[in-house]
Length: 266
Image 1 (cartoon, rainbow, N blue to C red):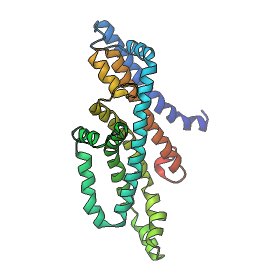
Image 2 (cartoon, helix red, strand yellow; image 1 turned 90 degrees about the horizontal axis):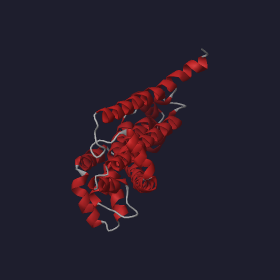
Image 3 (cartoon, helix red, strand yellow; image 1 turned 180 degrees about the vertical axis):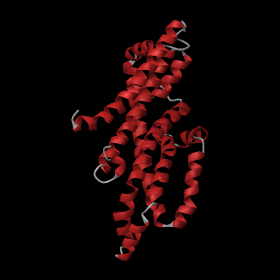
Image 4 (cartoon, one colour; image 1 turned 60 degrees about the vertical axis):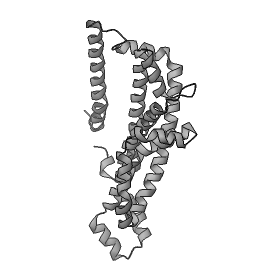
C-alpha cells in the first residue's frame, strides 16, 4: 500500500461507513414492511417512497426550490446580522452584557408562537417566512462568533499590546482570524436551522398554491392520506439539510485548510 493510498483510506471509510449503515437501514425497513404486511398508508417501504418520489418529482422539486429560496435568504440575513452583532459585542463588554441576553431570549422563544404575529404584521408572505427563519438561524452565529472573538490567546494579545496595536489592528489581524473556526462552526448549525425555520414558518403560514413549499406538500399529503408522497417530501428535506451541512463543511475546510488544525487533513 502506497503512502498516498494510505492517506486516502480514512476519507473513503468516512464516506463508506455511513452509506453502508444507511443501506442496511433501508434494507431492514423494506423487509419489516414486507414481512409484516404493513399497508403503505401506515408505513410505506423505501421502494414505494421511491416510486412516489419519481411520480411526483416535478411538484416536489418545485416545492423544494421554494423552500430553499426562503432558506437561502434567511441564512444570508442571519449570517450578516449575526456577524455584525458579534462584532458589536466584541467592541464593548458593556454592550455584550446588555444585549446578549436578548439574543438568548430570541432563541428560546418558540417560533410557532410568534410566527402568526409576524405573518400578520408583514403583508408579504415570502418576506414573513424569511424573517421567521432568520430568527431561528441567527443565534448560533451570534453565540459562536462572539465566543471566538473573545477567545484570543493571552500571549498574542500581550504581543499586540507590546507593539501598541490599535483597536482596529487588533480586531482585523488577531480577533477576527482567531474567531473564524468558531464562525464556521456557527454556519454549520445555522444552515440547518434556517431550513427548519423555513419549514416551520411554512407550516404556520399554511401557504398553498403554485408557489408553495415542501411544508405545504407534506400537509396536503397527510390530509389526503398520501403517506408515500409525504415521506418523499420529508426525504427531500432531509437530503437538502445534509447537503447544506456538507457545503458548510467544505467551505470551512477551504477557508481554514492552510493554517488551522481543525481543517488540516488527518
